[in-house]
Image 1: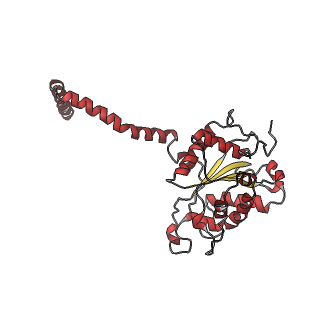
Image 2: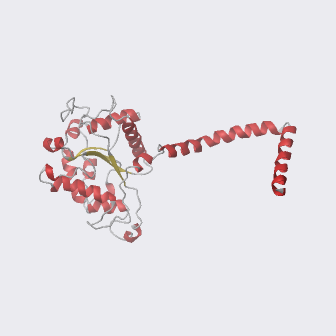
Image 3: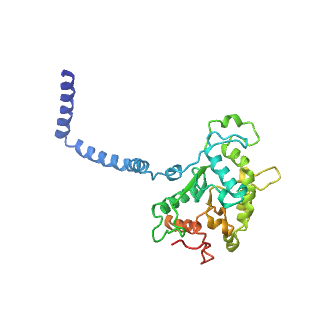
Length: 286
């Protein structure tokens, strides 16, 4: 108790001195104002983290991790699991009844993201906008399905990277992932080059060839895989019947000036629409 009284008396003396010393008060007020101003960015960052709106938080919530990625086809990271299912649905299933739509759903976006990248940040803001306004007047899916997204971070490090530092593919878990699933990218790339959007927009072949891990003379070009890459994976029966099943749409940039404009591009992508056509690929589900 004596110690507490001594501490209390000390602060009482300090407070009395402040009140009786006129020139200290303005300094304290000015100091408090500057303290609040300089604290605003930290308060904003804390609020964003708490609310899930910080940069990277939205994509992180849907991440399929590369942790544990090996250099063998038997690699079983979360990223491997979703990619293996895509391959099996697209190239192994012979009838629609064999297609697995239970594990990840009938339709979803798949984003290959990279940290500290302006284009990736723009894409994340657009997806956050789309998710928040899904099934509203401006962002209505023609098939009435729920919004779904999965992300794979190309910049993610795996705890076993050091085991591969001297191998041909380096220490990058993502490079090992690309090599493990080269057959999928080799086969999906050319089919995307024949998609209506590319033809109508007269897009250059470069990103499509890089996505397909096109052989550059030194083996599979895993170093030039285009990032970020936004895919639409459509396992719906409508897509099967229309011949646009599986990885059916791809984008590498969003050209709008606002997140809302970019979100509009993404809902068009979901609905298999593009600026060069007024026709929907599939019949609207009432």
